[in-house]
Length: 130
Image (cartoon, rainbow, N blue to C red; front, top):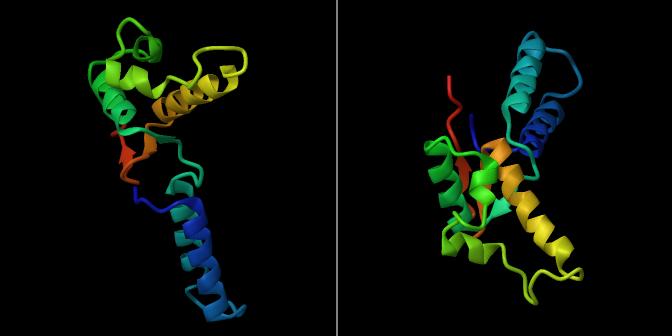
């Protein structure tokens, strides 16, 4: 799997189409199949973006076969990770949406097994168990 997003693959396919023209060449079907395969395996355009502390925590929890609820529990979460879930002003009704968004983004990264690290822009992909 590459670090290309679906948008990158689509742009590449459209560039090919423009450069080769509308005419069907003998390689047209093969090229079309190649781009469809690349598109299917490409990363989503809207990868979750999480802080590095959360990234490291997900990797640690997954390596130890911990559950998502374990990873999000207040009693277990390391202080560096807990700080990334805090919102200015505490957990009030006013800040509830911000807090839920932080939790949802973490959960989405957990479920997808791929995310972008906020500080570095690095794309992290966990290996799928076979």
